[in-house]
Amino acid sequence: MGSSIRMLASLKNQLAFFRQFRQRFETTGAIAPSSRFLATSMTRFLKERDPAKPVRVLEIGPGTGPVTDSIVRLIQPGDVFDLVELNDEFVHILAARFSSEASWKPAHAHSTIYQLPVQDYQAAAPYDFVISGLPLNNFPAELVKTITDAYFRLLKPGGVLSYFEYMYVRPVRKLISRGDELTRIAAIDDILQSHCDQCRIGRDNIWINIPPAWVQHLRSSS
Image (tube, rainbow, N blue to C red; front, side, top):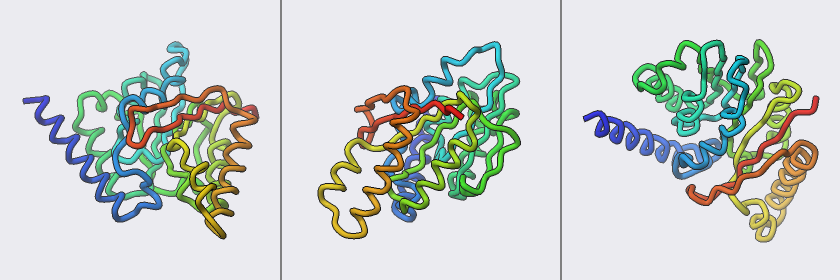
């Protein structure tokens, strides 16, 4: 009975994700929620944290919560877990999951959902881990710079940023695009590659995902 309820809830979340993809492609960015393999990669540095020390965790663009599901299992008493999500339907789904799902309930008291753009988010203190699912390749280059600046503003010195992007999207788009679109993609490539050149501590190839993805891990140096 319990497994049937979980399967039904998962299906409802996938349908909600696909509906938002159709309506708001620019900010949803994918046709399906992230796989558990991608979620495991996105949280691997959080999993390796010192269990004796409380941490602050920020998830940006959690959607229906496939990566959140991995994060809540790693949250301990004394930790702070904040989520920034712009989409109102996803906010409703996340709140319901914190209230109803057994694996999420222990983290509920330590968690807060904020509905606003991440570039407008002001945290009470910086974070040890920032985990982002935003579809940066869909945005204007100026917005990508603003968002990535926010990532590092919100990180503690030595904190870890983990985000994903779909494999070969920018290289292929750079080959086939022209005019303003080529300028946009090239500018995004420069912004993200610059951060990776300076701060990257790892990259995971996640083939079991729709589409396959790279997970980038960067450590803040300032």
